[in-house]
Amino acid sequence: MKAHFILFCGVLLALPAVVSAQTMPAIYLNEQDQEVVPDSATHYRLIEQKNELLGTYAVREYSLTGTLLLRGTLSSIEPPLRTGVLTWYHPGGSKAAQVHYRNDEADGVYVAWYEDGRVSQRGEYTQGQRVGTWISVHRNGQKRSKGTYTAGKPTGEWRYYYDTGQLSAIELLSREKGPALAFFNEDASPYVGRLHKRQLPEFPGGEGALLNFVSRNTIYPKNTRRKGITGKVYVRYTVGEDGRVGQVEVVRGLAPEADQEARRVVASLPAFQPGREYNVPTAMTFTLPIYFSPNFSLLSGTRPPQAPPTEARASNPDELY
Image (cartoon, rainbow, N blue to C red; front, side, top):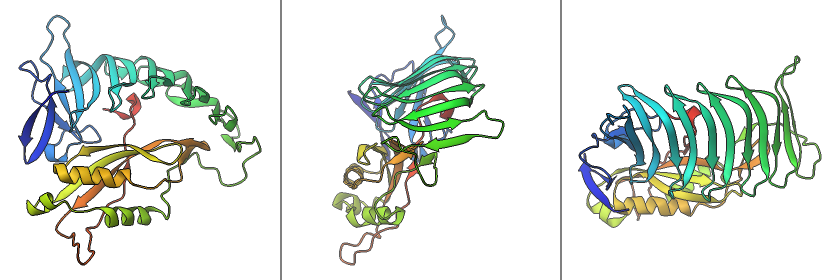
């Protein structure tokens, strides 16, 4: 997409070519969708002038590099109230999720898709709460989970499956004696050990080894060093069901050379022990800040301290806005 560029507070941001006189000034937001200054933002929102015929405002959200994240409409901008269909997008441009809003609450059928267009999840909202049967699906089309929500809370029996179709877990939530949970191995035998509903991916050697890998393998680009540019590049990546790192993108940059180097380092991470949900290998997305500063010393081996990754927000109405 052709883009126009605007330099704000020393940060180069790519604004889409669709920006026009009918669009209000960009609103910069952090991971929690709170309005912040551009230097602290992870994405921004563009709102068009009011459509007098419909009484609504078209809204779009973009990453700082200009990638479309969300498209929808608002019935009000102070405060922002969502109405009509809202659609989230994958970095490659395909739809990630979609649901109808009424009075700023999700209300209707919710559908989520993988990047290739295959359905990954389907369910229903009523007045902002999940209700009825919800089903998630593996990439190969096999059922991943099935259960029921009542007034926004999971109830009754929930079943989880490996991508082979084999049962991985059963959770009973509405028993008088309290919830019960059982895991199964891929060969259908009962799982013996401590049960974790959710486990994050594990880097070989742990978090300390991850930060050490980043420090040892990051090179302070010559042009960035010469210009005296210091700060953090925030890189988002996904640890797949097989543990491999993919979908690497810079969500908040510093300088072109530093951004490229940070992306290279994250893309070179070795495979993790994959994360799991209800004993099923699960893809999880994180944001890792990589710090560039004069502490870099090619001769002494000194590297600036690095911070651990944080899990990125999910693309569904429960966790956005």
